[in-house]
Length: 413
Image: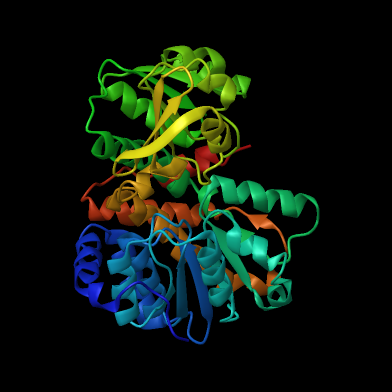
């Protein structure tokens, strides 16, 4: 299969990026050493659809070293790094992706990847699963199982499973402790602000920051905003999460109220139409909007365009919209994932944990697919424990262990 990438000559800088992240991914390095010897995926085909940057590339190489025939595509048109894609191709991985691809090209890449007739899939957002339950459903019977990286994708999976329509077992990697406790909270928290700050070059301290959604990602973004000196406002639809935000020290109010006082808005709900015409109508001039949810539907761009008299790019990854009354509002990275479209994604050490979850999810499927039902599974706790132990070992941190007496005490009825 011939890859489709921007330019193979970009590979040298891509190799440099991959080699850099390998220095800070000790858990994945340990799994690479182990799986390279046992080669549990020998003879199996795997399709990985994720944000194609250096950390994802290293996961692809670990799977290849474990014996798999690996095909990688991007899960977002703006998050693919062309030099990394080229380096992967030089390393023997088939790649269908390039930066800023059109919607049609993006769809083509997914179809080309599925043409490999994979045994296992690793999805990010559910686009692969959607195709395998739609126009490419003829391939579903070949799938031993797969895993899903994001909250958005898991929501889609659970909806399929609830309707009895899921065609193969899927592991909700996003719901593993070693994923959401660290990736969603610390990873999204840091990388979102990295994307916003490097794009705008503006101070955060003293600004009113509106965080839409107080799940693990929202908690991380709100925590980091507070640490940077912002006045944080949270919007929520879940009363339990709303009261949690209050107890964490944040103001909570509806979006239409927050829109009047917000300086920076960050959406992280996994839903659509979080910021719409009602909010645009009352925003301050100079308000900045960014999205860190998987799809570019949280900030309604159609509403924004219809209310604007002009639209132009004023700085890389910043679009200025002049509203009919002369107010100017700004949208970052086309409303796509700001931490990847305008940054390098989550910190390397965080993705070390997340991609260990993905590698071990694939291993779990290989070892257990014959007895797995067409359901959504959560990573077994012992796998999370193993990942955490490997990470602690790499950090040279020791912890206490239960004595036999303590184990007996805790197991008593």
